[in-house]
Amino acid sequence: MDLTRGTGKEKNDRAKKMMLWFGIVSLIMGFAGWTSAYIVSSSREDWISDLHLPSSFFMSTALIILSSITYIMAKTAIKSGNSSMGTKWLLATLGLGIAFIVFQFNGFSQMIATGYYFTGPTSNIKLSYVFLIAMVHIVHVGAGIITLLVVLYNQIKGKYSPQEYLGVELGSTFWHFLDLLWVYLLAFMYFVG
Image (tube, rainbow, N blue to C red):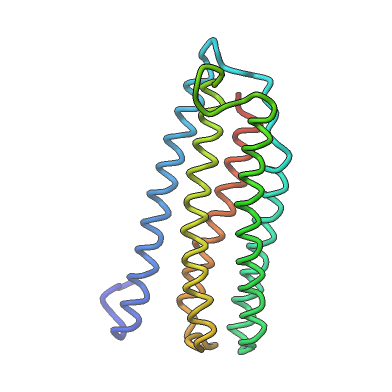
């Protein structure tokens, strides 16, 4: 494929998609580093092997998976020319994304209530990793919510159509990545160590 061919808009669209994928790859590398450190640290003598992840983490997982489905529905509606339905699905995605973050913080509260702390004399390296990995993911979901707000604003302003929906496509790609990343991270923390 010759990337130098096409109109200026086509080249610009390809460049935006490529930049998104560069960003996603860099995030994968960062989380790979943290999960690798988690694995290496699991050989420590003070590693807790009987930690049970909070139930709110599992509930938040269901919410973020559902939010990916609503984002797909929004994109499908916009591509088919149903703008009002696309807006409704984007609003649903936003609500589910915010609910995901609320349930994540509730999960932190559940861990603290059972005596597990992020830092301090009663903390543990495993708990520090769990808090760190979940919190860094929350920060990225926050970035995803900001991009979703931009997409929603542009949708309300009528910027997207069946012929022009690059912003929705880029936003949904990032959102689905965050969804898959969390599912991986939860499975990783549940099964490893």
